[in-house]
Image (cartoon, rainbow, N blue to C red):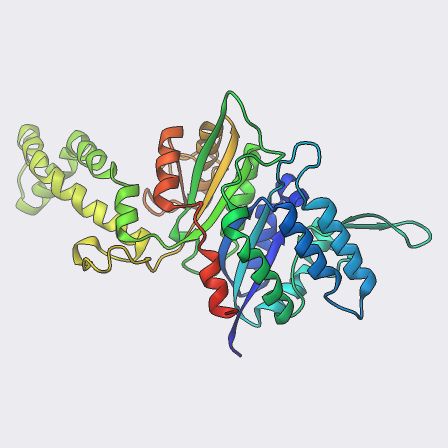
Length: 387
């Protein structure tokens, strides 16, 4: 069976209730599909109306269900009528064999017929009817396509608005503005994607404790050039740290190799000579971890190509965002990170530590620009499957 591309639209209410991480984790946990893309939208009135119309006439055998969902889209996806500000919708792309059917199965019925948590909608949605069977409240949590044809039509529409309505949605109706409001970046590192796991969703779920709003999301394969720019301050930091404390390791290693007791002064001098070499080596290993390529062996033509390793960039916005996120992510060394922190729970060492978090508002702006989080990279992927 050939590979397919399926989509999930996470609804504004679901995002506002900070259920995004749980949704992602559930799809990854209950399917063997790859999370291939992600983009935040602030749907315009035009996109919402076209999507509602597409859904309304999608299945002549189920007109009432189609009407229910179409009316929901018009009501819940459209810009706020009072302010004109958009609502946030997150589009996820999943890739793999029989992807459309697998996503449909895990999502469940819009009527939430099981009510036992077996599906996404059973857990995160609501469908309440009165004694006469009339729908009193309807929240389907996510919207998906039941067939490949519906997936094609929906994705063709959404990607046609990706440049105008998607990217970093800073001024959505439920996103704060004003004094003390900051943007910050979280980058889920390749160790979360090197084998199939629900970790990416679990980390996003843990970050929801910040109370911040997700305003941007992008699946990324960092190039060597991007990674070197992103971590350009690291070599100097590594060199200084090695000069400060590495002499003890040098003295021990030389003493063991030569059978001598190495004086501190001698070890310090040797350390000063070794520090640049040590920093360069460690930096090379970091870039290889993030991209899959060792910079010193990378041809000039390959430096700007997407790497083989996967990351997920997420932009958050809210009051005191930088501090809140860094507290949740924890110290660089997982062994020194606080209990319950992301690096403590999911990290291995100072390099393989699950996530990066910006250390200042200025760093966040710089890093978001390097990774080009606002730029559209889902349309080329969609066109591979649905030309």
